[in-house]
Amino acid sequence: MVLGGSTQNTALVIDTLTDYLEWKKETKSNFTLEILVNDKKEGQFTFNPQTILDQFSKEIPIKNFKINSNNVITFKKENHNKETNAYYYDLSLRYYLKADKIPPRDEGFNIKRGFYRLEDKENKNPIKKVKVGEILRANIQIIVPKTRNFVMIEDFIPAGMEIVNLDLATEQKSLRLQERELKGRELIPDFKEIRDDRLFLYVERLEPGVYEFEYFVRPLIKGKFIHLPAQVLEMYFPENFGRTSGDYFEIE
Image (tube, rainbow, N blue to C red; front, top):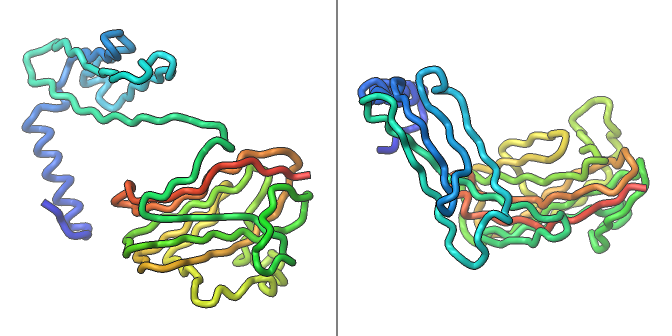
């Protein structure tokens, strides 16, 4: 059953879930659960009324997994009372690559990004090295082949930079003169948020087409920094996504 988005419906869902927990006696559970990977015990945790809000996490090095073969994860439960002692789980598999080894992906979106000097009006020469204090223009380009809803865009910046927030009264307003005309391709977000490490954009609906968004960044600290991929996805269908490659960026 899908409910409409209102506070009344949210309260109804919470009330129903509370009744379900009481009916199933979830808060009276008392059991020990073992986690096994390829029949090898990798951890265990005892769930009871005192630990009901606790979390158990376990990281397993990739070297412990079989290569070119199925890896089997199983659970072994030991009850400590006569209740049902139901348990629920999901699995999230992650792996980490060096920044310059992360390839781009196109799974329903295509996204490109780059940093450019202000005098490069056509964005022809993306750069990966800059001096402290030289303001750059950041460009994001997204190709959408079909209509997408509730779209989230995150463009991460290297750690030695900050995003120039032109909405602040203390910021350099002359940069407005450096903004390019995007000729009908401008992405107009329904929500924008500038964070310490990224630019976050949200668009409720994107029709098929090519979109661009630009902003400014200021290098502050010398060093060679990881430049994580920019990504775009449908919030409620995250399998529809796109990302750029990862890289390194140097500030002199």
